[in-house]
Image (cartoon, rainbow, N blue to C red; front, side):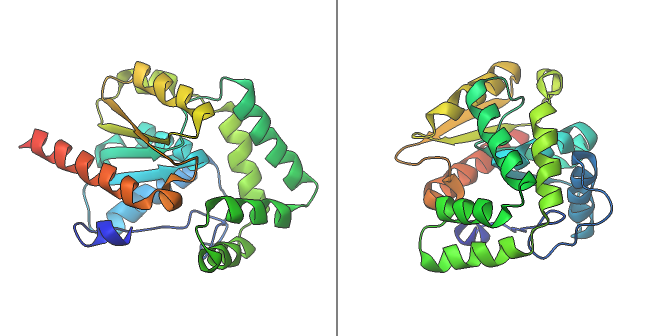
Length: 221
């Protein structure tokens, strides 16, 4: 994020019920996608490159469905169009049951450990997690398990960049699936990295985004 900020305008947001954002009365994908569209409008942009990570990429696909005109390019890492194999389904279902049992502290601790690169970042993630509403996480998990963007991806012409860590082998099938569906999709694998591409592979991820944006902008001239 910091590296990209020196070359382009970047804006980070906490979705509803996460970090410093209040939960609100609704937190389904449609509302979360509308929130992103409202943010793009609020900062005075007609279009933007939108970046999402892991389960939140489904929210970005819903944004593509509801507000395609504001998306100049869509960048996802560790994302999926539809949960169609047992490993990811089992992982999401396990997290769902963990939250149902009230073990949100266990979930946020393991997530912070998996995504942080040092103790400082771990503490930052844990602090942000304290403000996370488990109802929103449950809603996102349940909707993710049922969400299906395959029909949408067959018809979109919006440029897509799909990024995965080389060690995140179980997720590669999802990138290949999206690439088969969407003619505008480009797949990039970052070597030496697992699922936590934005933190563990931040420099390479920033480079992928920069190259993708440059390619899209060149094609629009």
